[in-house]
Image 1 (cartoon, rainbow, N blue to C red):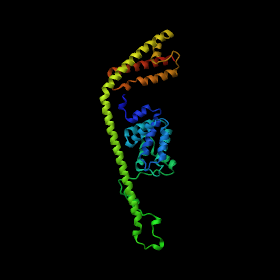
Image 2 (image 1 turned 120 degrees about the vertical axis):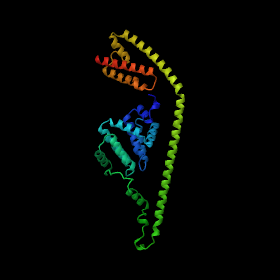
Image 3 (image 1 turned 135 degrees about the horizontal axis):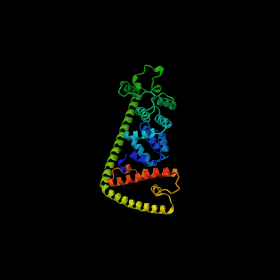
Image 4 (image 1 turned 90 degrees about the horizontal axis):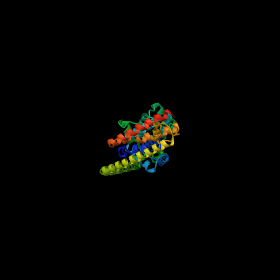
Length: 330
């Protein structure tokens, strides 16, 4: 299948040396970008995990995918993780819990993200609650409900709370006018307004960057579309040349094999098909079969020409027949 048909995460997953670690890193990055405050130590932790099996630009790709919250990629990563044992799921969720709570309380989004991830990798709610208690020492509470008036009332109450102790009137000055405490409230209101303005500016910058990136991707796609016919001709010519070389090599190998040893004809052809020597062990036969079957599987040529797909199907069938014959005599 052409790489252009894959999403960035699917393409990264295909070339990853460890698909489970790639999936874990994407899901942890999703938790990271939805924290109240993204700590530098959290970012360094993700970078350390990523360097095990990725290059630096792959880490940037995963962070961008996490910020976009592409649920298709999120679900794919969870499916990769779900194939492993329950112990692996436990270790991953403990990592996610520790990352989500490193700056204090869970953000509203991470309240739901942790539960969403637990459900995707088939972890029961009671197990999630137990692991949360073990990691943080606190019970996992129900997430706040923004649709309820009490949720917003608590936020407004926090914003309007007067600075304690140092701004409160002394006991011998209890009759001081209430206006004495107002500067603290106004200062906090200004700080809150400044923070909100900065957050809006950051969101706007992110939107501008995403818009520019989307525009660049469209331009790149248009360029690739224009270049596709010429590239297809080149690939077809290369494929034909490769087929000729492969056929020539196969005939040469067959001739050498017939001259070198006296095994039955079908057995010799099976060895040639799997690119093996006459004394190949069962382990080598299986390894060669997996390598060649993956390389020549017809699904990899989906979307190409009909004759190319037919050639791939014939080659795959020969590989499979050769494997079955050799394993019978192994």
